[in-house]
Image (cartoon, rainbow, N blue to C red; front, side, top):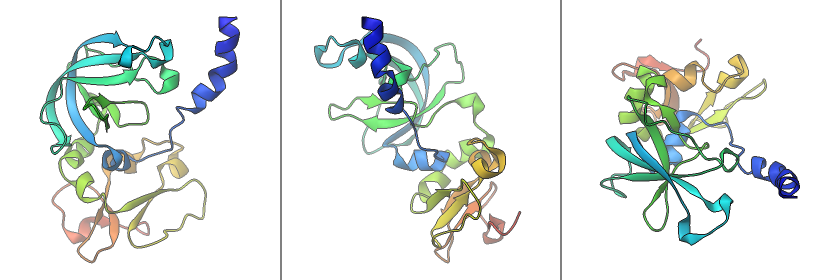
Length: 211
């Protein structure tokens, strides 16, 4: 009967972890904490001594390499937490990953940091050079801009403070060129446009009319 109960609730549980498509910059901007860290240990904990298996969390012990966002919230982070079950958006991190991970998440009231599948969680080696550079500056200054995901054509910008994200439309992928190479940032004329790498001269911005 336990299996029947689990089967009956699985659809709701799975739906609870459905994540809206998001550009890495959007995930950066919506996160309270963004760090690079290596995993040094893990154990299962039960917050608040709750005995329910669905409330159990994995406590990852980490060695923080660099903080990109959250300086005002945490000086040093020793642990991050994620649900045990992937159906509840839990993520599996490997302490054998020598390069570490890019981790973003939110802070609980008690100061603990939670990470999940809907956050910016990626092996550091899987990031492009542009993404690593954008973490230092451009994603942050682009948080005033809006990124609109294009699913169908026509896909039209709703305003000058918006960049159209076409990776899904063109490549059926959320990890296409715009996600891996571009940041949406505000120019001196207050409009927002895609920008790719290098020093930021005005002429190097990419408008959607420019392939």
